[in-house]
Image (cartoon, rainbow, N blue to C red):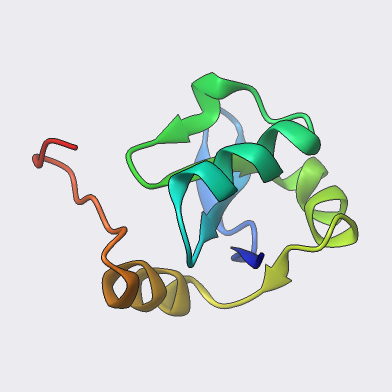
Amino acid sequence: MTVYIDPPTWPGHGQMWSHLVSDVSFEELHTFAARIGCPARAFERDHYDVPSHRYADAVAAGAVEISSREVVRLLTATGLRRPKGRRA
C-alpha cells in the first residue's frame, strides 16, 4: 500500500494545498485519507486536496513525498487519472 503526496504549492481559499494520490486504487486512497482525517468532500476526481497544515500528518502516516509532476505521471501510468471534463 503506497499513497503519495506532493508539496503544498497549490493556492486556494486563502491557503496552500497538496494532492494525495494512490498508485493502486481509489479504495486504498479513501482508506488512507479516512485514517488521517481527510473529509470525503476533499476528494476531487482522482485525488484528495490536503491543506498545508495537514501535510506533515500525511507524511507521518506513511504518504511518500513526490513532486507535482510525478503525481500526474503516476496517475496517468496507473490509469487512475481523471482529468476535468471526463466522467468517472
